[in-house]
Amino acid sequence: MIQTDRPRSIDIRTRNKKSFFFIFLFFLSIYLLNAGGHQYSADGTLIVSTARSIIQGHGYILDKEIGETTASLVPPLSLKNKDGEHYAKYSPLPAIAMLPASAIGEIMRSFAPSGSGKGFAHGFACSFTNSLITALTVAVLFSLCSTLGISNIIATCTSFCFGLSTIALPYAKTSFSEPLTGLLVLSCFFFLTKFRIRGEILSLFAAALLASLIPLARLSAVICLIPLCLYAASKNKPLISFLFISIGGAFGLLVHGLFNFMRFGSFFETGYGAEAAFFTTPFMVGIYGLIFSSDKSFFVYSPILLLAIPGFIAAFRKNLMPEAACIAGILFMNIVFYSTWHSWQGGHSWGPRLLVPMVPICMVLVGIYISETRRRARLFLVLPLLIIGIAIQSAASLEKFFPHYVNASVAEDIQQAHDENRLFKPGIPRFLPFREQFSAAAQNISSVIFSFPEYTRLHSTNYDSLLDSELIERAPDLWFFYVWLSVGWKLRLLILAIVISLAATACFSACRIFALIIARDAYINARS
Image (cartoon, rainbow, N blue to C red):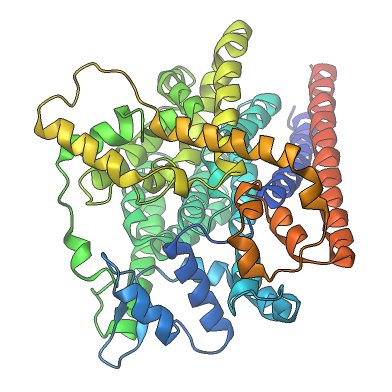
């Protein structure tokens, strides 16, 4: 029996590796096509500036002009040490992740459009970093679902739901640290699951390494290690597993402390300064905003995540209680932690930015629900939520989301409702960001259609003037539109070739994914 099962197991794992690769390739192509080619916030600009400074041999020290400007903001985004050097307040890993793209940007500087700023090439190249990170997250989610015993077709469906219908899609365009944090949390959980199920010691080492990287990507994400440590101790050499993850997390915190000391001369000065103690929001305000508000809820911006709730119950029936408890614990701790943060809404951002790292791991519960529910429920429940999610994320991807949604007003409205004791009283949901975003996206698409000849002719103005023009303002928020308008015919042909190649790669990958699903089902049926 062992001899007949082993080839089957090897064959299934080989097919899963192929599916992993083609899912990654498909979403990488989609996300590269969807990228904006620019930064969406001062946070992203600072991380890119830090990566550029490292490439140019200045370490994490910011350019003096950028440092002084960002240090004067409220709250400040950088901090000056006793030597007069400015450092961004962020953890070290996001800038390190951007180093390959920043190096490419350094090479591309001579190809920058006329009139663009000195940091244009670096910003443009680094804007694609989260495309790669999010595509890898989708593929890891597929592998995790397969490891938990979810069928190939449902695992593939779950990964597509995550990649296309959650806020992962628009955040793949940004340079925020949240997508990287989400990948590390999901990957750590994935390798812990592999160790618990298969007993592979290398998986435990990988999980410990990833645990050490989590606080280096985002220091506040260290709270995710508590449920992960408890999950590690639930089965299969519990003490050793617990120690591995605990030591990994402690090592990451130690490295972060050394990083703080290098910048500011203190192990405990993170760069946030006094802001680190700004947990001033009433607890119920943050809870309402992050869970129940129509303007900022975790579930409103990614409707497919509603299925994680019945998925939690389904996990118990599938004998996946430790996994479900770990995922629920990670989400619960993050919601509680950020609910009292002074900027619980995540500043100027699409949806609850601070909870973006929780989306991929919560999708595991969605996958469990889909695998356990009946086919009719998939058709009448999963499919509508998927379509609604794709529409929401498409609106946020085709049009820049930050000019059309003032988050401060949402936070102030919820605070006012709390002060007037009407926070949970029934009212008409506003869905303010969706109305603004859909309206802007529709106007831009119609404008491009009716002004199509304007987008085909050459423009003699420099890049900065072009960015301020109505032509760019009306264009879809896609990198090739911006570059197309600012270059000559030779480079336009190159852009066209790149876009066609990426679209062809996505189509080819989709065909291969579909073929692998059919082949695996046929193989299983033949073996049974």
